[in-house]
Length: 492
Image (cartoon, rainbow, N blue to C red; front, top):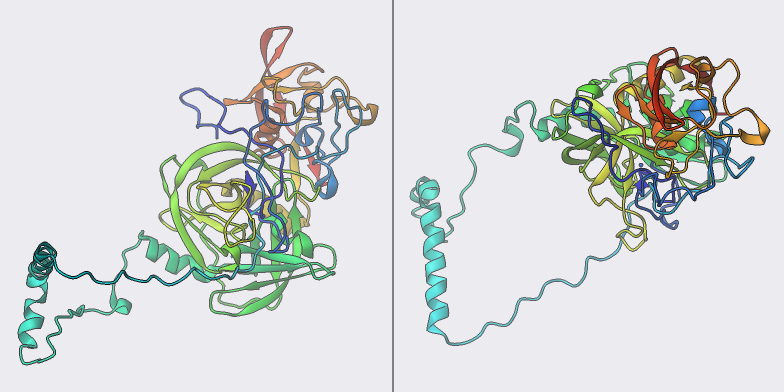
């Protein structure tokens, strides 16, 4: 899977949503900023199963211990299993999401021009067919072009061109049409350029969040600009504004930019309710694929609650989401852009794609194959508000280390934490709920949990203090317990 960043390898995500009860919602990339000419991020999501993290390599659930996976997004979570103290995040397994931002447009010719074959002589049959075609065309256009033809009967040129009674600018586009939604949303969607102090960077997308000049995007889009770098946002009218990153959440893959001298006429996009989205709903994505700003694509919601783990392949912390899946075309550069419903409401933030390892334009960059993933806006809104208020993300946690092995049939609490720490935090949420090392969590409320990463994504759709029902197996018996989620502030 390549998340909206350009395609570096990322932690795997299940290829299909975990099966769940009929009444439960169906269980279901991070546009990077690499140099447009950089090598692609290989991948296609493998799910957290037999093809995921190598057996015997267990890692703590960052949501569990309150630590986000290591690296820049490193968390304080423990890692266990056969590796006593592995570095977080775990090495990205093969075939996983990669980010799809980052790129300037790519040039190159489109090939030699078409050369029509030389005409052939003879053939009464050929002349007969041509005559029939002409007759058909004339008959088909007779009704519409009759008035025009009569008005031009004195025209010796013989032209039968028909002009529309209205020009394109006068055509009324009804609310709800793609053109109407795009016309309203485009002025509030920006192309983001992030650059590190060394000059490296890439291109992504963002959208106006409020009238104070805050722009929401992906964390991986602005990663290069976080430590001494530069970030700017360009509106469709060509106006460009410098800005600063006021906060970023690597685990959630959400970031907020504040524009310097923001214009007074900003129009925030309307936020929808991602919980109400249904499979089959129409979607509209806006972004800058391969640097082509203000590009609009359409599709549908293909699935909900899709467990996705993604990374930019640089060793940074993985991001986890219970994503909205769409077949709208999303490519490197779309990361951070809005995914809209048919009414123009934002229902998600485009973040990742699953793609083949090579793409077009001669760069080897990953490209869309119709599998895109967006962070649900209900979660992104909460994260963005926390970043604006405090500058730091707040993560929900259960206070236990879980394995990332896929063969566990759920999220297994490890026998040992990283560095010899306790796998279950003494006095933490899991401890108070009676969970123990070796327990395998199979459900969180009504959502089926088939792996540690799936559990992380589901926990992070909640807020600290939420009460959830945990279903788990111990000694071959299924049990349930109530658990109140704890909290952790920051990415490390």
